[in-house]
Amino acid sequence: MTDLGAMYIGAGLAAIGVGLAALGVGNVFGSFLEGALRNPGAADGQQGRLFIGFAASELLGLIAFVVAILILFVVK
Amino acid sequence: MAAGRIDPMEQFLVEPVLGRHIEIGGFDLSFTNSALFMIVVFALLALFVSGGLKRQLVPGRWQVAVEGAVGFIDNMVTTSIGAEGKKFAPYLFSLFFFILFANFIGVLPLAILPGLHTFAVTSHITVTAVLAFLSFAIVLAVGFWRHGLHFFSLFVPHGAPAWLMPVIIPVEFVSFMVRPFSLGLRLFVAMTAGHILLEVFGSFVVQGIQAASPLGGIVSVLSFVMIVGVSALELLVCAIQAYVFALLTSLYLNDAVHLH
Image 1 (cartoon, rainbow over the protein chains, first blue to last red):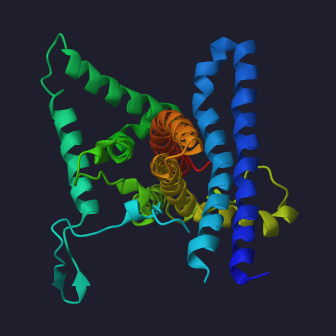
Image 2: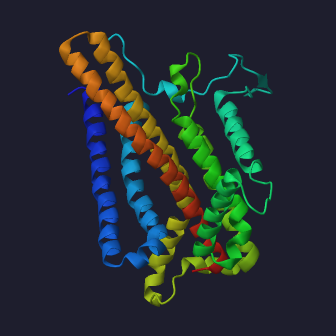
Image 3: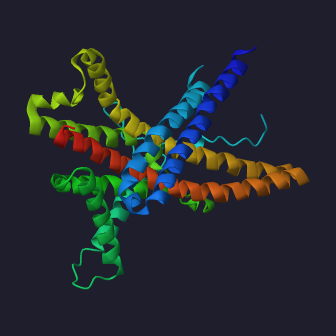
């Protein structure tokens, strides 16, 4: 395998993390909706926490994206 | 690689507006497109706010919009910091609306006019990191100003057993020190990724048309539909990222003000 090919495979593997973060983000919003539909009165007060959870799980996907970009463009 | 390959990274190029580099003392101090769009963002923000400062008893539409914006930030600050958070509201207002306007200006499709290419200021980590470090510096300043060296008790959670301290204090310290990086990185990567995605699908449309075959046409149409959807998603991401940045800053300020 050439170095370039290994690089592309590594970037592709790093991109798996982006998809996994999608599971996390979906879980955050899904759980919020589940709780919100059970108790709609309390839903509005929890929106800040919803976005904190979203930000925390999304960050890991973004870091996976950064790793993929670093492998593609920075590693020589 | 195909001949008409479009580089998705080209849009992030920082270059002097008039094509001239101005060097002073070995530093390149040219007036770049990044600086130009920061000024555009500032001008729009100043225009937006100044239009609502008429202080009429019965507010017009513009004044209602500005009052709604101020009230939104005010509400966020009071829920996350409390009554003491009022004095941080101006900073969070500037932070939120600078990022929001910069994000929205970055995705404006003005590039169809020749020579006009909107530049997403927040798609550069130099800009977002400065904003994040500014927030972090304010957190540190407020924390040490209010609590002195007692601020370090932020790293010691209440109720944790003493034998856990050698583990928990370094973990808390690292998680505290990583905050400015994660704050800046999140905004930068979210914007960069969105712009790359749009550019990639845009290049699919162009290359599909250039291929001049039925399959190329199908690819073009599908990519165009995708661009419409992704653009809508991008508008949502622009607003969410600005909100998350301001919200996390207010939470970190809450830590500094109340120490857990």
